[in-house]
Image 1: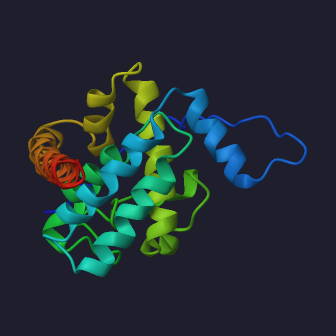
Image 2: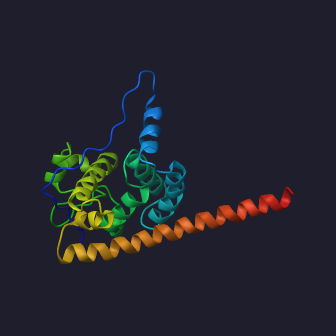
Image 3: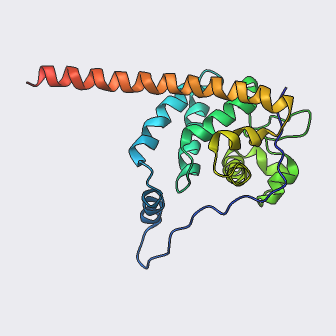
Length: 204
């Protein structure tokens, strides 16, 4: 059963960098990341691992697209791509990460936004079929849960589902999916280390 999203508080406004004359959008994105002290390279390293984890539940092309969205939509926030990815898997991994997924309670899209929550983030319920808009709403929703959780990211992720037995079951699933992504990330790191060792041995 898909799990819905419940929250009565508005989301925290995502940090915005100051507009500087002559800056490109890329410059502004980089500044937003750097201002929060988040390693951009670490973010990039997570993308292939997320894509590999997603590909267990959907086709490779869609897995890559959704992994890229997890990266892009968390730029300039306190969240890492993995944070958004594990929520997607917990919400709709069992339904092929489908943008058309609808729960019994009416939650919509890959990140399972309730219609009234989608509207609170500036989107119509129908727009939750659009992965990019659903991902954007999910980041805003998670930011609101961070406020509720007083900055505790683990609690915020649980609050993303709600409270009670459903939220407890959701949390178990989320942690399992996070483990899957971390396993893929470790594989990537081991592969990179092996490639580096091989290159060094044959160029020394």
